[in-house]
Length: 116
Image (cartoon, rainbow, N blue to C red; front, side, top):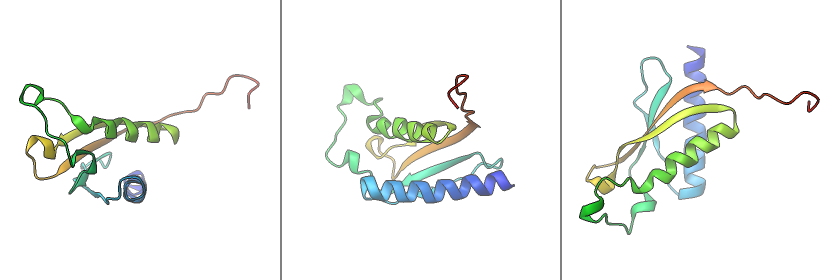
């Protein structure tokens, strides 16, 4: 239970502040898994797609997938391994953009001998 509360607090605070600071939007943190290790970030509006239309022959393209890489990389910097993927995308006709995040493990920092 403590891990779930800790992850919820980190997710809510970190993502709401980070998204507001860099993209000017505040996502909702919702859809927690029963185990408390997976949740969704719901973006009512995605500023990365404001002026984008996908051509018919590229309808499978996940245009904002850059956000998944940014989120994964940011969490790796604080020693957390996560899986990040798009569940819904407004470019594909969904009402909101949903990014699904799953906590995998804490990354143990292994320093070479003598570099402590």
